[in-house]
Image (cartoon, rainbow, N blue to C red; front, side, top):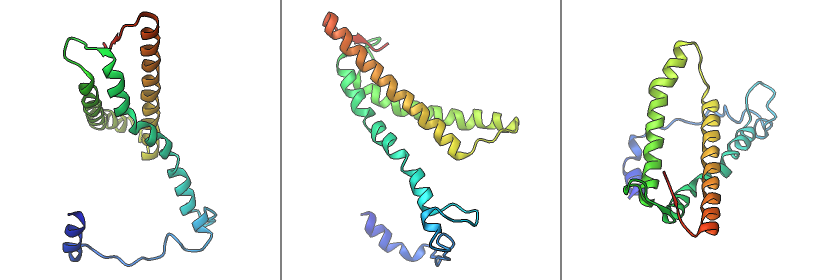
Length: 154
Protein backbone atom coordinates (compact mmCIF):
# COMPACT_ATOMS: atom_id res chain seq x y z
CA UNK A 1 0.00 0.00 0.00
CA UNK A 2 2.82 2.40 0.89
CA UNK A 3 4.60 1.85 -2.40
CA UNK A 4 1.39 2.54 -4.34
CA UNK A 5 0.76 5.76 -2.41
CA UNK A 6 4.36 6.82 -3.01
CA UNK A 7 4.21 6.02 -6.74
CA UNK A 8 0.88 7.82 -7.22
CA UNK A 9 1.98 10.94 -5.34
CA UNK A 10 5.54 11.02 -6.68
CA UNK A 11 4.87 13.98 -8.98
CA UNK A 12 3.82 16.15 -6.03
CA UNK A 13 7.22 15.79 -4.34
CA UNK A 14 9.82 18.52 -4.75
CA UNK A 15 12.81 17.12 -6.60
CA UNK A 16 16.09 18.92 -5.87
CA UNK A 17 19.12 17.97 -7.91
CA UNK A 18 22.13 16.92 -5.83
CA UNK A 19 24.63 19.75 -5.39
CA UNK A 20 27.52 17.56 -4.31
CA UNK A 21 28.11 19.49 -1.08
CA UNK A 22 28.50 16.34 1.01
CA UNK A 23 31.09 14.83 -1.26
CA UNK A 24 33.20 17.82 -2.25
CA UNK A 25 36.34 15.71 -2.42
CA UNK A 26 37.12 12.07 -1.81
CA UNK A 27 38.65 12.76 1.61
CA UNK A 28 35.33 14.09 2.89
CA UNK A 29 33.74 10.66 2.56
CA UNK A 30 36.19 9.13 5.02
CA UNK A 31 36.17 11.78 7.73
CA UNK A 32 39.37 13.48 6.63
CA UNK A 33 37.79 16.72 5.46
CA UNK A 34 40.22 19.54 6.24
CA UNK A 35 37.81 22.33 5.24
CA UNK A 36 36.22 22.32 8.70
CA UNK A 37 33.27 20.09 7.78
CA UNK A 38 32.39 16.69 9.11
CA UNK A 39 32.90 13.70 6.87
CA UNK A 40 30.26 11.15 6.04
CA UNK A 41 32.30 8.34 7.63
CA UNK A 42 32.57 10.31 10.87
CA UNK A 43 28.80 10.75 10.97
CA UNK A 44 28.32 7.03 10.27
CA UNK A 45 30.70 6.05 13.09
CA UNK A 46 28.90 8.28 15.57
CA UNK A 47 25.50 7.02 14.42
CA UNK A 48 26.57 3.41 14.93
CA UNK A 49 26.95 4.08 18.66
CA UNK A 50 23.17 4.07 19.01
CA UNK A 51 22.73 0.57 17.54
CA UNK A 52 23.61 -1.43 20.71
CA UNK A 53 21.31 0.76 22.78
CA UNK A 54 18.44 0.31 20.32
CA UNK A 55 18.93 -3.45 20.34
CA UNK A 56 18.84 -3.58 24.13
CA UNK A 57 15.94 -1.14 24.51
CA UNK A 58 13.83 -2.99 21.94
CA UNK A 59 13.91 -5.97 24.30
CA UNK A 60 12.36 -3.99 27.15
CA UNK A 61 8.80 -4.94 26.16
CA UNK A 62 9.73 -8.61 26.37
CA UNK A 63 11.42 -7.97 29.71
CA UNK A 64 8.28 -6.29 31.05
CA UNK A 65 6.14 -9.22 29.98
CA UNK A 66 8.43 -11.87 31.41
CA UNK A 67 9.01 -10.02 34.67
CA UNK A 68 5.32 -9.15 34.99
CA UNK A 69 4.24 -12.78 34.79
CA UNK A 70 6.14 -13.68 37.96
CA UNK A 71 5.16 -10.63 40.00
CA UNK A 72 2.08 -10.12 42.12
CA UNK A 73 -0.28 -7.33 41.15
CA UNK A 74 -0.16 -3.97 42.90
CA UNK A 75 -3.55 -2.72 44.13
CA UNK A 76 -5.08 -5.55 42.09
CA UNK A 77 -4.84 -3.38 38.96
CA UNK A 78 -1.32 -3.24 37.53
CA UNK A 79 -0.40 -6.51 35.83
CA UNK A 80 2.06 -7.47 33.10
CA UNK A 81 0.21 -6.07 30.05
CA UNK A 82 -0.21 -2.80 31.92
CA UNK A 83 3.56 -2.52 32.48
CA UNK A 84 4.23 -2.31 28.74
CA UNK A 85 1.45 0.25 28.22
CA UNK A 86 2.65 2.31 31.16
CA UNK A 87 6.13 2.40 29.64
CA UNK A 88 4.82 4.04 26.46
CA UNK A 89 2.64 6.44 28.43
CA UNK A 90 5.54 7.42 30.70
CA UNK A 91 7.77 8.12 27.69
CA UNK A 92 5.10 10.34 26.10
CA UNK A 93 4.35 12.20 29.33
CA UNK A 94 7.98 12.76 30.25
CA UNK A 95 8.77 13.91 26.69
CA UNK A 96 5.92 16.41 26.82
CA UNK A 97 6.84 17.64 30.28
CA UNK A 98 10.48 18.14 29.40
CA UNK A 99 9.77 19.93 26.12
CA UNK A 100 6.97 22.07 27.55
CA UNK A 101 8.53 23.04 30.88
CA UNK A 102 12.21 22.13 31.30
CA UNK A 103 13.61 23.35 27.98
CA UNK A 104 11.74 26.70 28.09
CA UNK A 105 12.92 27.24 31.68
CA UNK A 106 16.51 26.55 30.64
CA UNK A 107 16.11 28.85 27.61
CA UNK A 108 15.01 31.68 29.93
CA UNK A 109 18.28 31.18 31.81
CA UNK A 110 20.21 31.36 28.53
CA UNK A 111 21.01 27.65 28.48
CA UNK A 112 20.48 25.87 25.16
CA UNK A 113 21.15 22.15 25.14
CA UNK A 114 22.23 20.89 21.70
CA UNK A 115 20.22 18.05 20.21
CA UNK A 116 23.19 15.71 20.42
CA UNK A 117 23.46 16.36 24.16
CA UNK A 118 19.73 15.74 24.57
CA UNK A 119 20.14 12.46 22.73
CA UNK A 120 23.08 11.51 24.95
CA UNK A 121 21.12 12.36 28.10
CA UNK A 122 18.15 10.34 26.86
CA UNK A 123 20.42 7.41 26.05
CA UNK A 124 21.87 7.64 29.56
CA UNK A 125 18.41 7.47 31.10
CA UNK A 126 17.60 4.58 28.78
CA UNK A 127 20.70 2.78 30.02
CA UNK A 128 19.54 3.40 33.60
CA UNK A 129 16.15 1.87 32.71
CA UNK A 130 17.87 -1.20 31.30
CA UNK A 131 20.09 -1.44 34.39
CA UNK A 132 17.02 -1.17 36.63
CA UNK A 133 15.34 -3.98 34.68
CA UNK A 134 18.41 -6.09 35.38
CA UNK A 135 18.20 -5.26 39.10
CA UNK A 136 14.53 -6.25 39.16
CA UNK A 137 15.35 -9.47 37.29
CA UNK A 138 18.03 -10.35 39.85
CA UNK A 139 15.62 -9.56 42.69
CA UNK A 140 12.93 -11.77 41.16
CA UNK A 141 15.33 -14.70 40.92
CA UNK A 142 16.73 -14.14 44.41
CA UNK A 143 13.32 -13.97 46.10
CA UNK A 144 11.99 -16.95 44.16
CA UNK A 145 15.05 -19.10 44.94
CA UNK A 146 15.01 -18.29 48.65
CA UNK A 147 11.25 -18.27 49.36
CA UNK A 148 9.55 -19.64 46.25
CA UNK A 149 7.28 -16.61 46.17
CA UNK A 150 6.78 -13.88 43.59
CA UNK A 151 7.55 -10.25 44.40
CA UNK A 152 5.20 -7.26 44.37
CA UNK A 153 5.83 -4.67 41.65
CA UNK A 154 4.86 -1.79 43.94
